[in-house]
Image 1 (cartoon, rainbow, N blue to C red):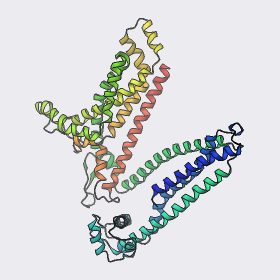
Image 2 (tube, one colour):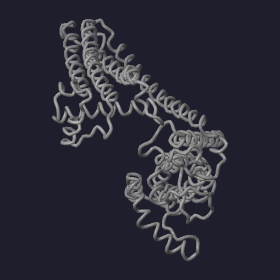
Image 3 (cartoon, one colour):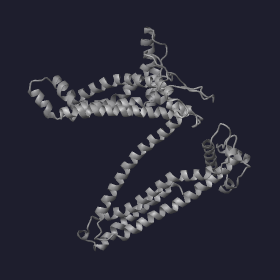
Image 4 (cartoon, rainbow, N blue to C red):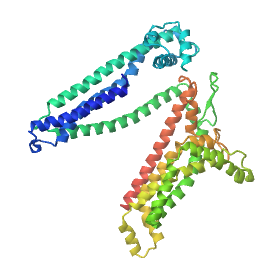
Length: 489
């Protein structure tokens, strides 16, 4: 049964439980709400909560563990003879999953029946012909061992999915029955429901934390595998980025310095555009603009944050790049290309203006009016009050806005691809093409990649390095915020 159907059945059962729980509570109190310990809503919510939450949590854990259990069983069926030279067991496992998905797609689209898919062994030429009629291909070279493993993989998937359906519905029914039977007028439903909601909130925050930890650990493990094949000194101190996928050992030069330079250079240019414009716009809207002007200007500025980055990239490629080349780079003799650091930085800065202006505007408005009145009462002008009172008091929030903009700039990819090019170099000329760490992460993981090669694993080392840099910026910003907060509180 599809997962969506299971979820809908559990939710429907929870809805029925809510209505029956309320009805049972009222019946136990002879229809008088005053005899109930809690409001009727809490009794219905208790039944719905114990019906839905345990079942969905169980299903989530099952879906997380099922692929791991299946792959552990399937990987033992792959003989050493099926692993070609230069390949690995993980790559063969990828072929098994691909073929299994092809069989499932063929059954779903009517190219064959489930019995035909289960009965296929090594006669798979006819399979490819039938799959071709529905636009599905198993591949040009499907070996018998892979096909048998794919069939077993598909069978285990179906078996585990059936078991999951039965167990999830059983957990929902048990929760429904238990909570319904304990529903009486003296049952402390409000306490139980509030405790359950609190537990769900704690679980949600724990999942967020564990997800972050999982991301970091995954990058650490793959980065360790990378440094076991490539020298860390060449990676961190190398000035040449030239990956090679030809398979020649030692042919790649994977120095990160050109990528870091391009990332920081483009980000600095973007911040030089976004911070002054965004901060001045925030000061005008909060201190000078009237209600009507503010109601018009702020939404118009915030529209910039809703424009897709691919649109900004096209704007950089078609408009800003040629304009900077024709009016600045060529007359000054600094370059002939429209793809440059300045192109990507200017367009990215325009994109970051709402991040600075909106947050700074909210922070400046949060400064108490009494501080302004005290400054004006001492004889300061409006501009002096803004410079010497309002901005210092709002500085921690402004630093946070700038940090958010910097993090957004460091992680941007599409504008860099279309506006700055893909050349990894170290240069001070802002009108030359450069690239960033995020662009190279995408390029190293795009296409037919081998996760056992350093040319692919380097993407994880790049990601971990970028994470450490961003974490350092956060720590620095936190230090600045705490220092000035103590001064102005």
